[in-house]
Length: 236
Image (cartoon, rainbow, N blue to C red; front, top):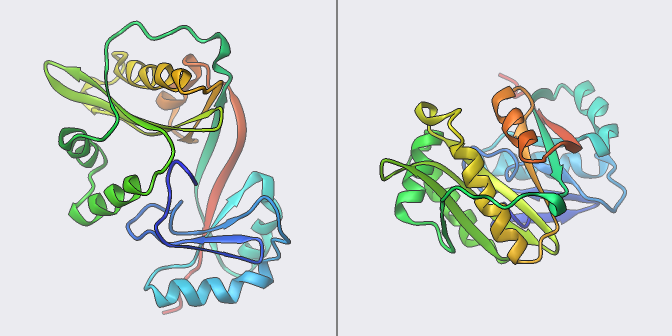
């Protein structure tokens, strides 16, 4: 939540409702909190009314550490989609990166434009993303690796207490399998260490073998939890 904040959110009965706008499900869904009753019946009506009022589907983020919410949502007709892993890296024994990469405290226009291009984000989605970045209050850094002067790989990191959270990792399809992603993430891990981070985590789509291989080679070998979404089917 600290590394990808939502400008609009509500805590209610052990749940966090997030509504950033745009297409990102993580910040436009109902999330179970660590503490609280997390009884689905206590939030269902409120959630559906809130998201309907915003003109959005009601979406629940179903974590493996709160899997008891999955079956009731399925019984209510909420359709499953997406499957994401959260991976952990105890970076205490990690070797520092040796290949060069850019590092800035703020995202440059070039960095943002590269992110929009690599994710096929339109103008509205790009604005939502930039607004989200403005809401980050913890230490953050933006990394980029270049090929022939042009940015081909990006990511950013946020340090929360002693944990680095790596986000928005993306590499140009024509520049993959050349170590650019490794350099970009490695630069962020080096920076995070200077901020007191002793470990790191990131999220990756479960059916992305190339990304999984990259992250495991960087030491992200422990799975903390996984999650998928349940989306309300709208009646015609």
